[in-house]
Image (cartoon, rainbow, N blue to C red):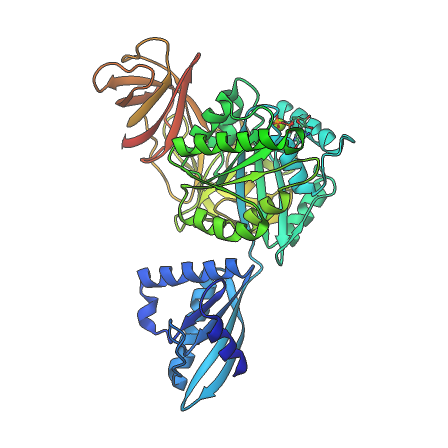
Length: 522
Ligand code: GDP
Ligand code: MG
């Protein structure tokens, strides 16, 4: 009983929640989701463990409830826990007056939470180094360890050797980080994936100039939860930095800014860069927070998950590892953003023929869940048709899994389709979908040397699709640099699966812009 009183004195907050009782009323859809979200939040705040005190009102008054109400409350907590991939690890009950109060402990089951972070920023500002140091926990001490990793990485990406090599990964187990000693070791990666209860993957976008070619696939081809924008303290905010920030914002991603190379500049210069970053963020309507200690990370991450206008700014150095404890804490607290209830959908990124296995496609799961053995649709083929295929096996970071969910980056071995019939940009889907030739979009032109009129044919990038589109009709007839407008568009060579609300980028020569699909015609 002393334990109950202690909890009551502490009050609700962090990972503690008071509930007088729950009834079947709380199982109604909207209410249930709300309670499930709340539980998930409490579990995250408690690094995997939440405590519910029952028989106690929101304001902390000990009420006591009867036996049947107590049992019903516990049952409903079980259902809620199941919903958020957790379980009741203990239920303690105490008698008070003629009623019961209880302490229920809820823990995350082994299900992994996996967040995907996209890095962006000017070339040489330290993206790869930052990711390398984060996933190994070791400083970039100039002995070349990180650099060797980077070289291997760059090399492999350029040669297109592996779909997954550019996904650097680290994990947490019971709130502690687990890391790779050798970042390119596939078996070590598999171990981290196996043992972690939370995984963080980084898509290093390898931002060479021209940035569009290399970054688009990184940014639009995968389902990214958060953007990590890197700004080197010596150079400060560059044009590319602003452009990349613009893209991250257009993708509606919450953003974290890491100021790197703090060891290379004076205190004064550092303050100047922080001011510059702050004004850059404020100019696009964001609210920057300078992170001074890991203790702030929980709160700011919570704010950020709720409101993506909040942007934590962390000062770092890969030499001294200053700021890395803060980054770790931020990533630990940031929840998966896309808890999608929808049916399985994945845009195909890469296609392989694997000896002894057959056709393998890779990509990141956009929504829903996938299980081994399931029957899916794949398409659209050039004629707009979708075909049935069967999932033979699923791999994540070289580790065989029997179930994949939204946000996972996976390779899927398929039965029923030939390797050479597939193309990047096709989808794997639970449902038979409609291929789209024509759609309306709201577009925004970044740069274009002349007027854009009907007949303009840029390449459009959406998800993993890169395809020539024709501007069939422009509202107001013309568009120029800086203009926004409505456009009817049509894929020039073949249909694709796209839907309303999707964001895209288009480019042609030196001109570029972005847009959102507002209406599709099927
Ligand atoms: P990227 O092009 O943005 O991926 O940049 P890299 O990670 O390749 O880094 C470019 C250079 O900056 C490399 O030589 C790194 O060793 C160096 N670098 C990166 N971070 C830091 C840092 O925090 N301090 C110092 N002194 N050098 C850094
Ligand atoms: Mg790099």
